[in-house]
Length: 498
Image 1 (tube, rainbow, N blue to C red):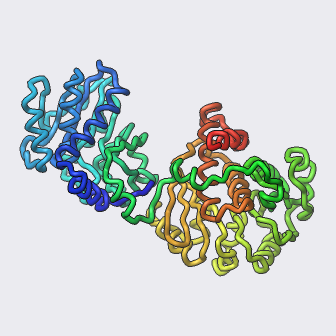
Image 2: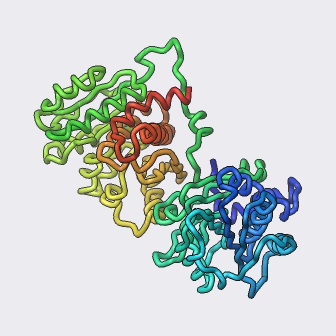
Image 3: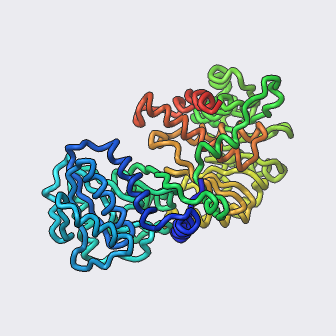
């Protein structure tokens, strides 16, 4: 799914209006009807609904939703700025239609008392839409603050008021904090970054039938990883294939006290379909690895830490899980990179070793994949003020080094050397545990070994990891699920795909 900017979304609306053809008012009615259908299925008819409408098209959506909910016998109350009434053309039409209904009370924002709203009631935010690009006026900011302090379920239409569609907001900005956001046709970048996404709650994308021609022909560098993309990437196994068709994965991992990381990476590589799997690890982990991962072949890497990085030239390597930063490990690892040219996957201590000397980043083979979390990224490339700035820096570094960067976050971003960004929307906070990254390392390395391109191995690997985590959370809860539970659910994900 493409992610469009606010200006591209406006252009898509206009193209649809002129080419469907449909009036702008009826397009607004279509959007409002989709929201109303969603709300009707999820709300109780006994719940009173308070809808707050601005003077733009987002307010017009709100007026239309109020009218439609009233026709469905909901108790609806509307708040707007009655002192101005300089509504947009389509909002004016819907405001006039609303005033004709005697059963809906329309009040000024100044009359709103948040203490009057009880827990079972609903607050709907239709004050500002995705077109907001400035700091809101004080009167509206105070209204939003009162809306936030009210009890009850909070729902935003299009985007929580106060957020910009494509940019970071000021740290002291006033923003409506939604439990759910009902957006139209597209995800917005603001939904996907931690500084802004925390205001959005659960995202529901409603299809309002905007022009497929415009969507298909309009270029963007930002995408959502959805199931349509995954189905294009996934390669089901040929019944007449053999183990030699699915590559040789070599996990280089572990040190004294950190053999568990090597186990997780190796198990996840096996569970993701690696044809032949090797684990190069120190001798101190031999019994553990041979017992817990009997399908993998052990390669001697040293006594208590890895001192030997010798691998065959047809191995696909994933390096870093529990590696440690012993001076000899560092020396041998850098020596290995200096003489190695095939794409590989680097994580954790492999990245920490490289971070000690930024000039060593040039040793990473082109088309390789690195999987840093935000702190590892900062050690590698420098501090940034926020996740938007971090992403821009990642795009520069991916191009400069000709590598793929899997920037781990709540919505992990895969950044390509060509400047594309793929946001992942599977996964949950149950992954916020040590070992989750080791699992991801094994998954991506295994896919790379199976001749998925570095780009597709990154996209598919991150999606599989998150999808398995979602299944694990359903079975065990986010709190109790373990990285090993994610591995156990990889097979369920492949069954869904197959």
